[in-house]
Length: 432
Image (tube, rainbow, N blue to C red; front, top):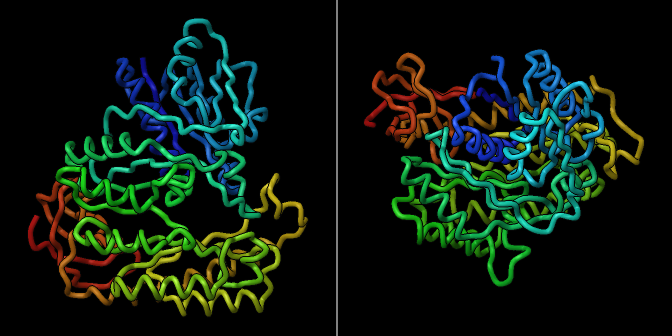
């Protein structure tokens, strides 16, 4: 039998999709393209923005055109809006953000009995981390390892805590075993990921995120480099910085630290847990330890109380911090959030214009950071080789393209950065 899938949204979703797929492949299902007809189609949904919701609906409609015997839908959109996608004319398995480990069994029963299954648990009632079995690793370039689920922050614009529940930490021994397995399978870069990654340990006794980082370095044999997918500025403790500094050969020279806004007025309305002064002081402290570190960020523009004056402050602040790269996106009014209750929004054209202004600043900042490494040698994990042109990321998250006919995907190349460019710098291979 054939199975295909579509995974929308974040790297956590991708990890969970791969874990679910493993069970099908282990039981002799053949994995085919999402565009091909399959007996079973799996869609892992996202609800972080209105655009994500729209994409989810589009993918469901696309899947239905191929008429799979069973359509399995899971994820954040399902956890909050599953009633919207129930279709009596289709055999479905509908699961939210829990009980993913039961998906395979539900699908087999649905195939046998032509009966739909709906298993939705209130995310805010979930107490334990759900362990998913990951028996094979499709991507051998960078290994994404999920270490926690859920979020306790409840930012006023965000639905995710309601879709994922509160923060829950994964068993550390399972994390270390998975990283060891990935390393044994030739994966050089491990990316620690989660819904709120560095909140790991908040629900544990006498064990913190910093403790986990150190134990990974000490226990995983042959560990390459370790990247933290994202970390809130309030979670960058002295202990975390101490561990990173203690093992410089293992930690990537890069931290992704969401800002969301460079205006204190907007940050307060967003229910973020810091102001710009706190954020900037923390960045200065990080750079005292790691002068050349690449600090990247997420920035939301067009929040409902972001006036023209406040947006000017945002632009000033991001230039003051000198980010290496900014992922910018417009505010999306989400039903069920505190911000939605304000019943205010800015015009779409204004949001788009502000996004474009930030994108222009972002390019300048990215090239400025990249220039620090001109003519320097970088270690690049080759993620793609297209007819002898290789692409990959350095430890500091600079993306570089270089010519190497023999470049093997997943291998590490030493590359000299010879030409600046955004989003891609140009390099010359020294050795692989």
